[in-house]
Length: 252
Image (tube, rainbow, N blue to C red; front, top):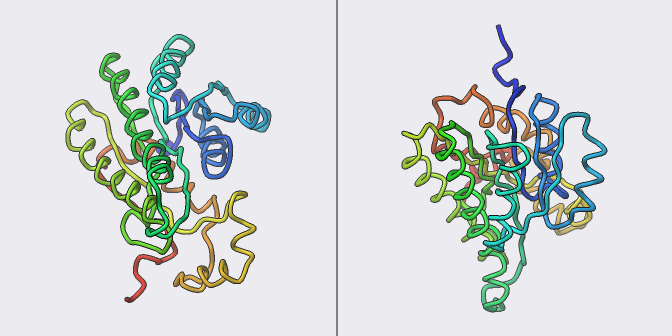
């Protein structure tokens, strides 16, 4: 039986690949055989990541908050390699604040990156697929906070909830173009960005609220990432899949 998760001959774009989950996703997809395009604002980090990957890697700058940057990015992709097959819509940020302390700048910063940025990238990618008459897979990286709430994260939770609804709307409208759109909703995943926080007492309290009593590892997302990126999920679209150690099942 052929490996249904094999991505040989496919090209995947990973946004926000300069650190955290995006960096790990790039390595995972490359190991599965994909040629990859890694993009973010911090190009030096991308160049270092390229040195860690054995397969074909294209490095390009991308600021998802800028319509011009997104358009230039996809023009560059088209000129250098043509239309890609897979988009991992991962770029994101947070600015934790109590709702009463939020201001317009903080609110817009998070929404413009996590929701508007995801829309911009997905729209340009979709336009390229349709123009090229290609099928494709879009994997939006949402969060369990798009399905529940937590303290100090109203802007982040709102953006991720919007991304989940965008995923479903895109899936409905793009199905006849043979473009699949799904989302992963990670719970608390240990990364180089948050490891210091989870070592604190407050961080440990978060971990104790997870039914499995541990943080997720980046590798815990590999299976679902490869499922949604590959033809193994050829009859899946509009699915929102939590990977959270049972966190969403916590009783109220």
